[in-house]
Length: 405
Ligand SMILES: Cc1ncc(COP(=O)(O)O)c(C=O)c1O
Image 1 (cartoon, helix red, strand yellow):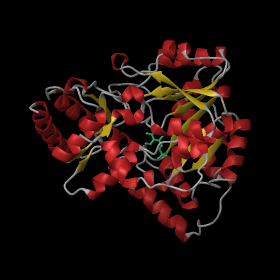
Image 2 (cartoon, rainbow, N blue to C red):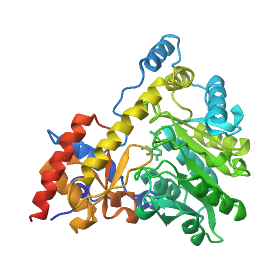
Image 3 (cartoon, protein in one colour):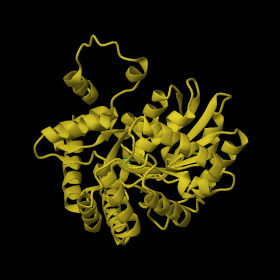
């Protein structure tokens, strides 16, 4: 059987005479995006492939944006973001995250959390620097490290450890070239959440070896089973060496507004602002006004969304575990299940392709998130429960067929 990625590659592959930079060619295009495109062209498909809330942006946020447009927020803004938004973010970071940030220790980023990750990497990483990343991990980490000329070093996350990034595994990979550790809790693609002891252990290593930490916390509000999100920058001696990356995308269902933020020591923020000035310039003016309304307005939306995801999580975990040959942990965060398909004896790309063809269900091959993702599929439960039910029934049937040869 042709692998899914081969098939997709063939569609987009052209012989090129353009002499691309090595930096560009080193970066693989995202397996997730290609699947999403293919799904859009296939009628009747249920996509459990993409990582964004299915809810709409709250009404009061959209209203604030409409009003802002009428009031003339259609021009350039300060590169670091509007001062009132930076102030609101500093307050949020203090109250929610225990990070004692001043407004000038916050940057509002264009391009969402992805923009913040790129600016952090460009500011901190020199060619040849080693950067420790979770494997499996969010696809953007490897790409931004490569863009900065750094060397990604994968820290394996294992299912038997709840896909946590263990300090012992981090420590084994620290060398004299290590500059930075990228931490992500709750995690995409596994839904895993780091325990306090993990974060303290990683913090101790960062202090001991004088490393920076980029902490991606975009799913901070989607935690379950009584878990409390902890920001590594709130731990002693960590604020001065941590860039805390966050976004409005997941918390307020604002993926299309392309606005994120980061908190870090002022000198680091100043440098990120400088780079933003010459790249994205600033986050869109209208998105900044919407973001301010999101922060300052009622937060019921966030709580209700998390409760809804919790229901879906409980449903899908039980349902998938009832299918013979498949198994998954009960993830503690985000809206993903990392489904173990090892018993099928097929590669994750083959299983994802088979599910697309036979069940018309889109999943993402785990290998798209790094070598450690082989043997898994990422399932996003950001879909109404009736669609999840239908998708699971189709998956069950397709898996029975696959096992029957
Ligand atoms: C772990 C993680 N970090 C960051 C992002 C970036 O989101 P955005 O650029 O929309 O803010 C995503 C999006 O899927 C994500 O899963």
